[in-house]
Image (cartoon, rainbow, N blue to C red; front, top):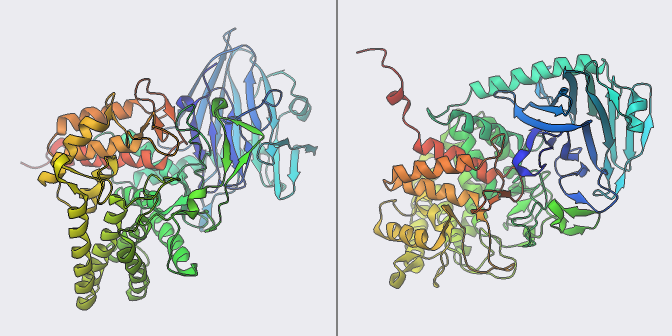
Length: 603
């Protein structure tokens, strides 16, 4: 059987729920009834001795020797093939229904599984033991005529199936001689039998995703990688509110022994900006519009002008962090955390993140609700905070827990807030406000470049007024603070190359932090390095590194947050939106223009 680690996991979902499945027929992770809910399937975060089946949904093939997993082309539907030592094989199809019905999107909290014979007379066993209380207990099943109901306080779910309930509840092996269907959803009676529902919903869901992919504006190269990244980013959105998850998992560690285990099932305003920017560049504007509504609600309902870096997907402000004792952790590398203390941190780049994301509403004529004077004036309040705080110490982009510094990236995002307000004011024909914000951005920008430049090291420091090297300064030209060909940036690249490149990948930094020195590479930093190489004329090197990063993806084209530069093994929460964004932005920057690859139709 294949290692159920990150290298063989696929993500399914429908923007209401999501699950991770592996090629061994297991749902390795999934929360209910939404992505930040109770993990009813939690095999990814191993249990202690004697409880390894708690939180499981497995289709086991007796004598299994091999397994494979892949997506149906251009969809979020996953197919796994399991083979045994006697030549028998089965196919498992997993998906969450998503399609338009009755004039609106149908995306229930629902998982559909189909298992069917491919060859021989396979013997299978179904193990369904959903968990509750953060993996601490197994839900008891109440047996109905053709279903099992599971209830525990606020958690309620029903599995409707055409499989034998006796075999299912007693977990007995049986010969699979006809297709079986499993519909896990709300504890409600289904109007159709599970076979008809599975067939109809699979067809409609496949049609939805293929039409969605057809609407994307793709680069000429690396299209399959970009498509898979775009679908994954879409799956990380919670459409009910417009929030975007950093990742659908918690506590997959950055490396095996660091203790850097965090809950990413929330909406970081910084990460979300990069996500909607990437999708927008592909023409997928609906996710961006929904997210703009989410942050508009967050801004308008804050009691003052102070923004948190992260909110719950419902907009919740309090994300109290606690350790879960019932789960041992990914490969035994605990602790497992629920909640995230970062909500209490000052991270001043958040003001720029909100304003940069909102800027699109004032310039993109495709959007249903364009930006107006009222929205601009709301953003000005955040701009004033950015201008006030740009050089105040904060936790920074890397969310240091034990220190605060005057981070160059945070300051640059505050500059960007003022710069974009000036551009919006000009577009809205508000010359006085445009002049006001232009002067503020010029003053802040001059201070940043002066105070970040370290003459003796010939490098832009990651901190103002003190020297430090990290990868975040690679984003300064992306924001527009400094040109790519500025001698100060070019010499900064040289310093970063000698200091941070490790086995071909870029580390975010090399100095010790609250948890010691980082061991693994933060994947998105290598994509930032790809973009910097390409923008400064080093195209050959950029393309080579990009191809190597694509090779680092797992079996179905997904990336986590970190990788081990020496072994290529993936670590960190999975799949990570930051990393998938990197695939899209680098492909768009590096790809050959369409007009150079298409055969001319006219001479």
